Amino acid sequence: MKEIMDYETCQKEHLRQVQPDTDKIQSILKVVKARLKIIPQVQKDEETTSIIVTDYYEVIKELLTALLLKNGLKSDNHECLISFFKKNYPKYEYEAHTIHQLKDIRNRINYDGLFVKSSYLSQNELEFTHTIELLQELIATDSSQKE
Image (cartoon, rainbow, N blue to C red):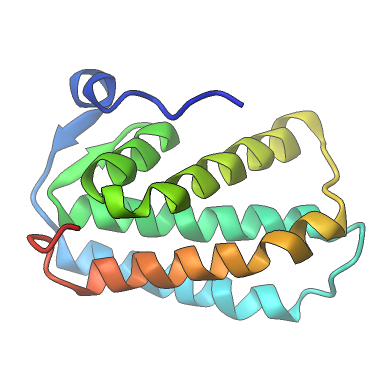
């Protein structure tokens, strides 16, 4: 698996300063809430596992987007969302690598038509929900309290 993109590269090429936008952050959180409402309603089987995994990634990506926005940044790629998280919240390096692995799986689903085995979801779903809860907490707390 490829390493997470270097944060300095992200700063130079993919991140830009923006004004933190509370309304946009709240809108993103509302979309996240709607996605999270749907995930448990999908019957888990070999045909739907890839869809559920993709939905978990979309939720995490949206939360990372909101976290960046809260910190006055916007990224033009997913990789730098993860790089920002890893650099600015080093206490959560394990979660950053979990997100990166999930991104790679999601890309293989979307671009290669990969069907993920249901065992992957059952082994990783708690990690996904933990990461979602962590990101929600980080968005809710003061951005100056980085770990």
